[in-house]
Length: 80
Image (cartoon, rainbow, N blue to C red; front, side, top):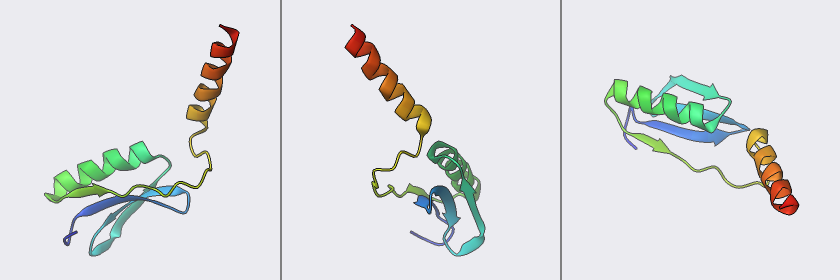
């Protein structure tokens, strides 16, 4: 990554955008999607690259809405 490029990554339970060489521009977000959207917009405004760094899988559910949807789908399949 070059100076000014934007990286989106998971850090201590939050999603963070950081600008290489400009730590004052770093911001954190509650969700991955929010961070990715903001990271793309920031990189476009700076005329730089945007890279998404995958989070390491820990087995912890980070989006309860998605987990609930999976549980509901399984229950509906069992009823069918």
